[in-house]
Image (cartoon, rainbow, N blue to C red):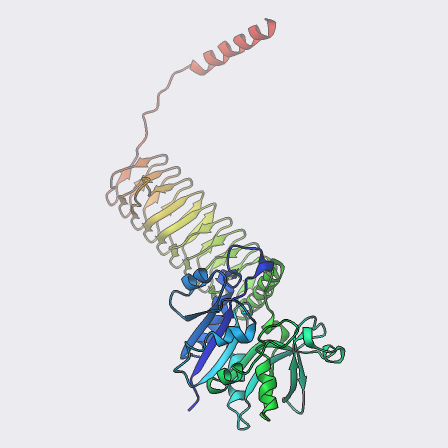
Length: 452
């Protein structure tokens, strides 16, 4: 039986390069804070414990976690080894394997984490597993000097490395897997006798090697372990994530007419034979069923789009919008917290909010549901096959019956019965010749002003 897993996630840094009042690890990628991307991958391993080590802006992280992980405070910040030590009390009764991760390294796959745990529990029982990567541009990363096979001979931080060691292109990602009984015993022996006067996490590897124990590596792709420390790196991460997601959408049977212009959120669900035209943005919480068409320049969030639906161009679906099969929302239509039944249509220039629209109903151009009185929201209910004429205002709460017709230009404030015609307009006033007399008088007045 495999050991229980705990994850210690380091997020105590100040993130000064981000230049933000928001904690670095809470900056979103695809609409989801980078810390939550990482925790999503951790959760796939069903961990027994999760501990997030916080420092600056700890209240923001606590609010974002909402009790989903324990917190440990590192104050002051004295290095990565010191940071992991702060999780000791939270793991006092834990006897399994510990993954050490970083909140600003959000894209480590669950499979890579599992590979680290598996290697830790291999027959040769290494003391520490270190996730490494190869790069032709190692910059200021710590170096991993490898021995035979995947064994580590030495680890060294860049500031303390010799020129020969800096020439090594095998780099330390910072991520490790260690048995809990080994982790804190080794950390207790770490000193700050180094160029930065910090307690380095990597020193647990060198200490274990000095004890005659084996420490080993698991290799990751460089992109999996890229840290995000600035707005520029955040944009690079977004670009990479979007590219991966677009490829996955097309592999799953969706057609993206101009893939580089389509933006997905972390939880977007998109079916087969869906067509997405250029410049479409999917916010969080969107589900698109098979065969739907999303036309250009549409913005969709918190919405469910049924099979065979058509949306846009230039449509906006806000949270709570539900389009049942073959419904249609056309250009410059906004839908919020409303259900359009099967085959219902709102083709032009309309606002449908806090409403239920029955199957087969037709909403004319310029129609609005007046759902808000400045204090409360109210419901509009439109029955099946109802026809709402152009430029109508439906003042909620109001019900339009099945097969009813609302004449164009009406302001409806009372319920309309099934099959009823409702026209609410002022009586037209006709004054023959009035316009001709008006134009004549105005021309004469203008001519007189020019002579004056």
